[in-house]
Image 1: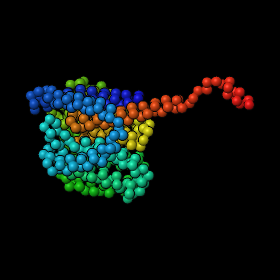
Image 2: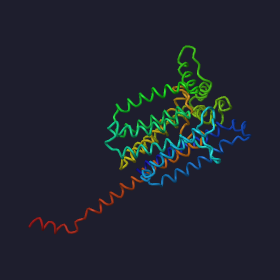
Image 3: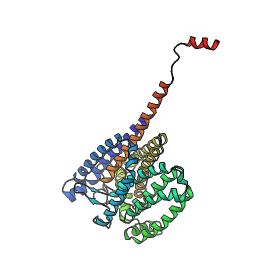
Image 4: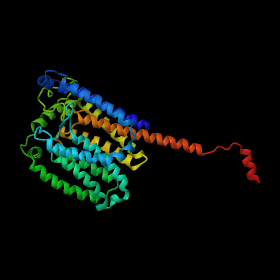
Length: 388
């Protein structure tokens, strides 16, 4: 378990370092034009990375079982924050997703995702076999999923809400819920969410644009087209760090949602494969930590965190390669961001703590087991007793 904790830290820290390099390269031109400083966005990202690493260290020392005590309070608080965001958050690009705290702008959806994972892990342990019951078990947990995902959906933030539902339903399935309950719930959500998404102008535009790109004469949207040009021009080894052409204001959100394309352009196919391997290593290590955790809460919490990271990475890469519609989701640990990098780092801290805590528990059990076995000090005495 201790080795797994080291593996998780090494993989996540490596991704953070790669992210720093690519963000510096991808944001330099935009920073120079917008802020008269090539390092403006990089310096902002660096400060958040430092704070995120501090959060990782702090959360790695907090016993993960403590989160059970604050689970219910936390989920109620984040529901209140999401409602506050809907009412008071300023509209940016047609969506009210961000709250300006003065020293930092946060996106409550990133916080809500982690809190929901913690709460579901707690409820799955608490409910036990009751999760098999649709009314008294499954629906109790699924209601929290609908509340959190629904409040994020109507911001509107369709892609984040959809992924939160996928992560949650996967946790419920792994936690013992019946597949038919998950299927029926998913079907209802897809119909409702799909209908609502087609009502919202920005999501309808993205979906229709993606669908039309498969038809005769269909064209890719500008951002996706530039992103695929960026990926294609990287070749095997890439054009080199800092030599990206698409980051020179050709590719929108080059340092954010579409940083995967810049990564492919500058480091090539080889660099992309290395990054994907880091994500895979992180996921496998997280699953092993979950498998070896001594309690169901630790198991589900480790699984939820690990799965959420790799599904976000997969979706971001799929968007950049044209396999999915443009979503606006960040590439974990690599994209420029504030709340995302901070709470991802906190999640890794929790994962590390689960590994370390269970390693210590196993070690203590082994020591206790050895103490309970009293050595035979006088074998001849025992032999005499047997003869009698």
